[in-house]
Length: 267
Ligand code: ADP
Ligand code: AIR
Ligand code: ASP
Image 1: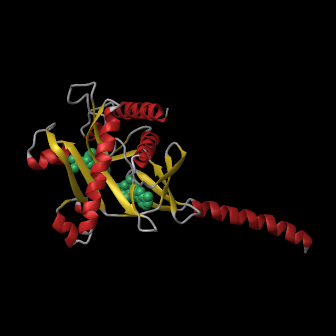
Image 2 (image 1 turned 135 degrees about the horizontal axis):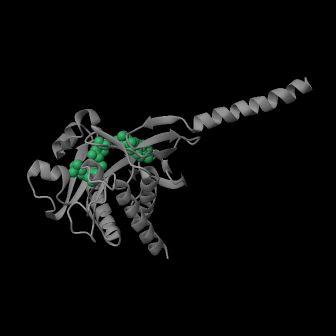
């Protein structure tokens, strides 16, 4: 019996350990740019940043070498900075260069876009010339729904679809503008202009609204202040969208400047 116990116990423990490892790495969701894994704590998930790149609602697909590690590090610095500015985010820490431990949230199916300068779909849909400086930041809500092509929402459509209450819309607008002010200042110190960007928010188990997902060259338009050429100045996913080349270089350059700025701020 004793011999059997000695044999059974370690084998059983190994079995439990394997199950625990598998459980702790259960893939909850795989998206276009990240994989979300469960952890042993039901309130925490791991966001694994991939090198995969898509554009135009995944009509265009490719790979940007090193993007996962770059976007994860940039997002970490920016979330830490926004926390210092009083904005609650989902960030906990980064166990590796392309993995972020975050508070699990229920994502609001909204893409909150803030624009400082006309570019992208704003130009296509309104005819405003590229580069027009907006008198004040424009906050827009898009329905986060790939099947529908992420359509632009009006205030009344948000209410109609019960995507947010009037109070939540107001709160999200204020938060988005606060993020914009803080990020414009941060990027300006990196010699980058924040043209526009997309945010995602979610609610945690206590119902608290947290800034989630990522903030990176995949989700921001960033123009290099040291470049006047309209193509050379592009430092974000537009290089991939528009086949401008040197995509990896641009992402690496943004990371370098963001890290330099974060080191400067922490001194
Ligand atoms: P997509 O779903 O658009 O393809 P990603 O590939 O970036 O995007 O996948 C990451 C998914 O994880 C997104 O759907 C995003 O809304 C979601 N997400 C981001 N942060 C959290 C979080 N803290 N908790 C749960 N889900 C999150
Ligand atoms: N964005 C919107 N959906 C996904 C992303 N990444 C970001 C773009 C751009 C901003 O939102 O990267 O910074 C506005 O995009 P658009 O296409 O509406 O002009
Ligand atoms: N994120 C969307 C996509 O991957 C839109 C874009 O970035 O162009 O298709």
